[in-house]
Image (tube, rainbow, N blue to C red; front, top):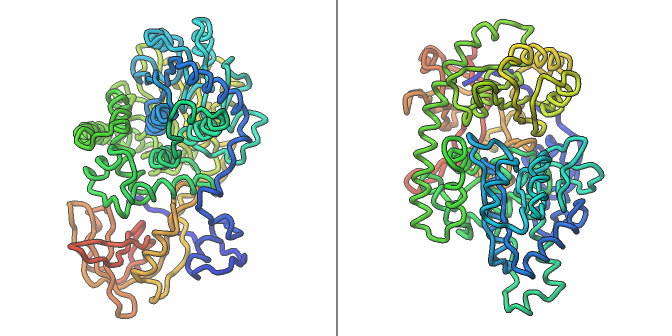
Length: 571
């Protein structure tokens, strides 16, 4: 458990009528200013027609369907890419496409996106149309290679574009210049979902379904996949994304989801009927990502495509094995990184951290960068060997620093330093020559130091304040659970306060189980991954904690439990 300074969130004076007082306090602290921003019905989704390039993409796809041309989906090897691919396949088949397939680049053989090398593999599928999902906005050479072969290319992506765009037949990306779609935080899976919504509308207007005796599909059936990909990609949960995730969670809870999600929830021990966004983020997504990190994301995609629950369970078991293997690799890498960080932690001048080890697994460096970023509250780039001469880096940032913009600044000022890069505000990827590592590390630290101030670098945990005795209840926990979805930029409520310790003991080796008391009212609590050299501490009678309210279910009984995010002794 990493020590952070507890800071209270700013309380706003905005009045939102008809809200529970606890929710009013929580929502206004997250800059919610009206009840309209809390609406979660599908009718409140932003319309698709404001996305630039939508009309061209839809007409190209509609032509392909009406002439039963071969459509090839080019995905990405993370959970957003896997769910995007699954959404495209499910939707196109439901709309009547008879020749749809997919291809995902192997991370180790091809790298990211539609590359010319991948186009040569794609050629074996004889596609008439290639549709990229969660990638493509930086694939200038790959798009050109496909066009030279006479293949139409539709790019759907959400990553930030460069100054120039690939010469595709259509590009749908809310982050491209002059796009008026208000939600710039939508994930790749959300973009392809919107494209499929627009395509269905167009086909309906052309009487496609009646003429071909095809039932017009309900596109909301794809929202389980949209929710999973959105949460997994850790995009900001703005109002539109909250609607997508909320509606997807509703379908999962009511078992109206693909068998693959059911199987992944089962094997991770999560209650499907009460699944939350955090279950998708911390239980399902890592298992799905493990396929792309260590092997081939096709396993994850097939798990999301199958209609057979038994088959889905078999693939979920394989994905869990890969995830267990990933954890072992990651733990070894963390130990090596933390050894190298002994000097960095005591060096106040190091604000942008670059780490590299020849033995590191390039499929796990993103997770490693995230762990070190969380530990030091500094932007981190972890590098691994891509080949004998080139390094692949995965970057993770902190609030206040747009990491993709940092890389763009470096590339502009030092054109020989970075070979290629891409990403968004909180995460990015890059490659550079091995000989440039030391030079890049110094430049990165210099640029980061210029952009971040002292306050940006403070490791803080923001609290929604204290709860009184009446609010420390199962009812409050239930209200907060249903008030989400919570996630990036719309964080789950955290509270703080001083409690008396009645009982304390270790469970599972590193987790501290506590019975606490406030004014003689006992309450259960647990702190995960504590320092076992400090806890249990039987000399400590009172502790100051930051915590989340949670519902504990055990043998059919439900009770409130505090999930401790931070604890410190009270003198």
